[in-house]
Each structure stands twice: as C-alpha cells, then as structure tokens.
Amino acid sequence: MTQVNQHQMPIRHVIDNAEKAIQVAKDAEMAVRHAQLQSDPHKLSAALAELESAQQALAKAQSQMAAQDHEHHEQELVQVQNQLDQAQQSLDVVASNTEQPRQIR
Image (cartoon, rainbow, N blue to C red; front, side, top):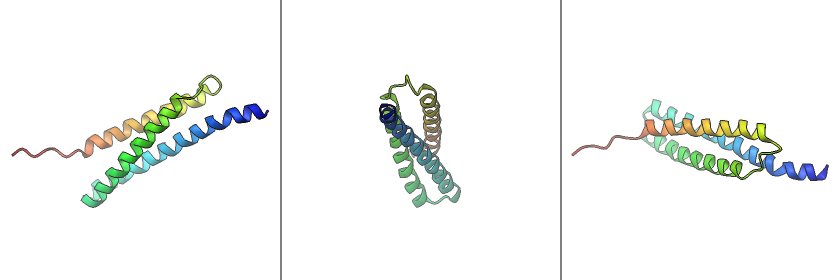
C-alpha cells in the first residue's frame, strides 16, 4: 500500500500542476479579453504579461506530463494532456489576436 501511495504522489502532483496551469491560462485569457474590451493599453500590457506567464506554466506542465509513466494512470493523464493542449491552443489564438500590425513608413 505504501508503494502505491508513493508512486501516485508524483502523478497527483503533476496532475495538480497541470490543472493549476490550465486555470492560470483561462484567467490570463479572460484578462486579455477584458483589457481588449476596455481598450486600456496598460491593462492589455499587464494581461499580455500574464498570458506569457500562463504559456510558460502550460509548457512546464506539458513537460512534466511527458516525463510521467503513463502505464498506470493512462486515461487520467491523457484527459489532462488534452486539457493542456486545448488551453495552449486557446492562448495561442488569443495571443495571435492581440498582435499589433506594424506600421509601414
């Protein structure tokens, strides 16, 4: 029993980190959209910094997921990995929508 619990702890930790990263990504996405609606450049700048931080958190969580033994917890890890992928895609869309066109001189 002890071995099972010890084996599950790293998996649980990785899943918890992934779920936190997903929530951070959702919060960052909402912050960017809110700042865009308000047309506030200061809030947008802060929200974009939050977005970048969220992207780093997602990348770290994805890296941790990839390093795990998927044999014993395959279905749960696959579900969380899919959520991470969806969050990353959503942030990519938001980030691409916030890029400012360069002025032509």
